[in-house]
Image 1 (cartoon, rainbow, N blue to C red):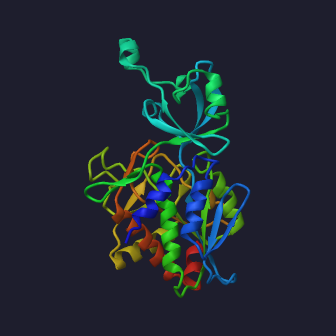
Image 2: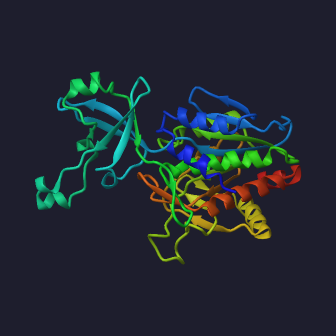
Image 3: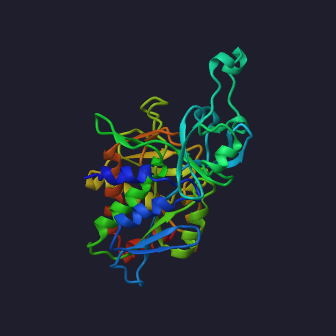
Length: 356
């Protein structure tokens, strides 16, 4: 059963790229009793207590961070300039609520400015906004108030201000499903494997700074040195964009097995292995061939001695915006396929998957 309370805590956690501390705290609490370690980048490593250190290593990856912003400067009128942390589209940003975490750890709410139509020409109404002209308004009168009363400085991180909830039909709605749903998938996979008889060692790697260049996974792949890896991702759905026959990320159609994106060409043996298990076990899945986008697989598959990677996506609407939808059935299908795939691994099958 999907733990929506935990998903909500993960979704609500403050964690733009480079500022993932709150997310790490939620995860370590959820995985109390497991072996934990962190590194200077705030990557989190969680190992099964049953690992032996002499068996093939399966790495579970998901990134901790969400797309956000950082305070760049404070203008004399009290408005705050900012830069992006991750891939935003400018037209999706104005008139939304955000929260700034100042150096004292205080959370300051604000609004990304938008010009009222009363003060816009017809040409301005149809133009695309510019990030360099957008500002954050925290309700201050001037620069001194922002600095002295609100405690805000350049370098402070900014995140969308959204609270998790569920819809009438049971869908999940919140922020940062890319990739807090992937974080949840690792947590639940480790929980289900805790007492399982396995032929491999399993390490969950929660990577920082994916949204600004897959930087955390650059490190976790080198530290873990896996034989195989499963990457969990909150993947952008396209069921609201195209014909259902063309859509490859449909809410409710199961886990999304990714074959290709800008950073990664899948390992055909690992794909075939996962599909066979899904079909035998009655786990719903959908295949995705992506023209754009990337995941931590882009770094992991070329780390160490080259690593076969299986990317399992949880389709999520409107990723890289303030608000996302996802279906719990897809979350469950993703976890189930990961658990089944790991449980059935043997030394022989690992060797088969790692040889071409």
